[in-house]
Image (tube, rainbow, N blue to C red; front, side, top):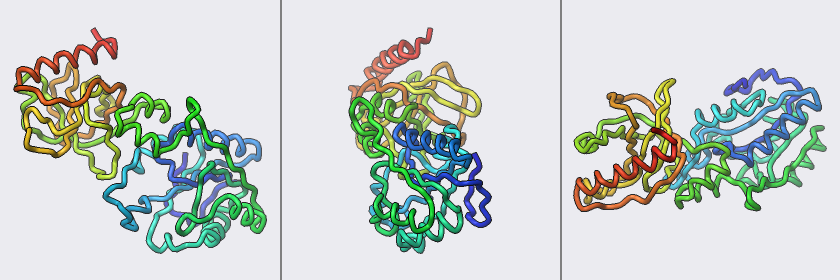
Length: 311
């Protein structure tokens, strides 16, 4: 996959394009991308995904504090690169760009810069200023500028529509299994390991405290999870806790993400790790002291080792 961030002098042969945010690159998106590749093969062209970054709400400051995304731009690039598309165009989103009417966007970007031949898009796609332009408008533009269009039906899983919004809702409600099913992979977060208060180490469960650099990254519901941890090229299993640590810091409400990596005792401060969420084990609880907490952690560890079928 070739990634383009400069739209001048693009060299794409017979571009077959789809447009969207593609947050999470989930099964619904894969339906569109599979059809995109199919048409590109039929027409002897190249498949192209056109997306915007930063997210419009960040640039326009429209409830940016409440914005939650499944993927940042680097994660999105990584997921899209696995789909087999030929080109990814990451168009810089600016306040000036936000003022473009749909017709101007199609003419200036899709027609003049990319030279679109065919446009594929999902069932609910809207674009242009204030997202007012839909399928009927696209068809009118297609006839005017000489390209064809195709609108796809929604992807269903268990008779339910797959969408980024629903996946975020499942993650925040604790339904990790359903979220992962809709994604088509295990949900993951990446962050830097920072120094904590060392209480975990004192009770035999040293943890890596994870700081996520993006405030908009969606974090699953508080609780204990069975996770896989990637550090560089190495992979480990672990038990991860999301929450306020009510037993050891009952007066602090700041959310923490900390993972105890099984069979691992290295100091990895300031390194980046990625954790993939495989199973939600239980809610976060407040215990009557460290001894009771340690007993529960031993039980959690046993459950997680059984889940991963570890000796």
